[in-house]
Length: 110
Image (cartoon, rainbow, N blue to C red; front, side):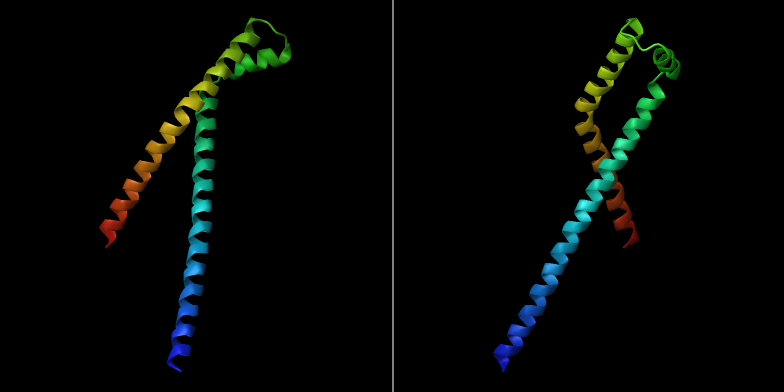
């Protein structure tokens, strides 16, 4: 009888642990996707602010490999290389800052 009770308790504990692990993994995936999406949106918005739309309009009216084309291409390449170099470091700084803010909020509420 005592062995059955222990077995039943162990099964319940294992089921709860498995459910908890599943929920934690799902939440981690969701949080990482939201963070990556948010960072991508912020990155795109910052690029849009730095791009001269009138040059693009001028190029689109007459799309040829001229000096304007090469200037735009160089500008885009600069954004691309800056993005690759800065993406990891900026994301890490943002992640650390957010965690520090959450930690302060958690300690302040207890």
